[in-house]
Amino acid sequence: MDEKTIPILPCRTLQPVLDFYTALGFEVTFRQRSPNPYAVVERGGIQLHFFGMKQYDPTASYSMCYVRTDAVDELHTAFRAGLKAAYGRIPARGLPRIGPLKDTTYGVRQFLLTDPGGNCLRIGQPTNDDPHHRPAPEETFARALHHAALLADSKEDAAGAARILDRALGNEDEHPTLVQLLRLLVLRADVAGRLADEKTAASALARAAALALTEEEREAARDDLTRLRELLEA
Image 1 (spheres, helix red, strand yellow):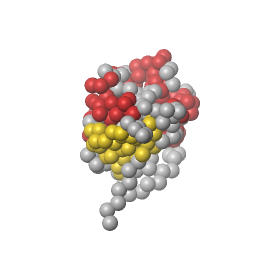
Image 2 (image 1 turned 90 degrees about the horizontal axis):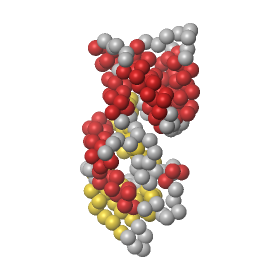
Image 3 (image 1 turned 180 degrees about the vertical axis):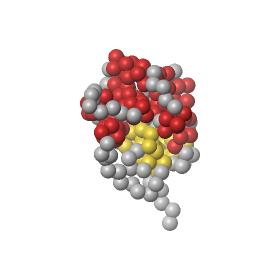
Image 4 (image 1 turned 90 degrees about the vertical axis):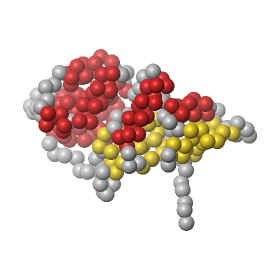
């Protein structure tokens, strides 16, 4: 037996969706205009089907697909490059958009990609065999980062994440390590951008860029420094 599951995802019109996936390196392998709009895109082992629906609202979409890969870093880099070439920038909010690459609390290194139809692709590479969320840390700032990241990236609740991060950054009784401070500031800038709060985003980015980290600290914060560069270049 050789079964294969293929998602069939909605969109208002096909062309913007097909243009988006073409920019990511996908090939349009099938297109039907009548009796119903329908198309297929493929890239390596990823195959996605789409159907058009005039009354569909992409901004209200809950459609989602999980793509499991053994090369998540390479896909993230390739997709960002394709979007930059096609759009002249790397869209981080609105539709379409691509999120940061990061290690999750449930043993997956992943990023989120949302197409013009509002369909979200979670593209991940398992880092261990336990798919359950890790318990929230007890330490104040590690706990804040844990919950803020879950809200921002798993629930896409940027406002909720911002509230947690602001409480942590405003804590006058305890002080984070430099690596924790960098992570707090980068995530705060990220969620501020999603909320179109450019003033807060710029302030957080400036503070993060000014931190003087040792080589050991820079290695520990490698993903966060990469995201800092992405946000500064956006």
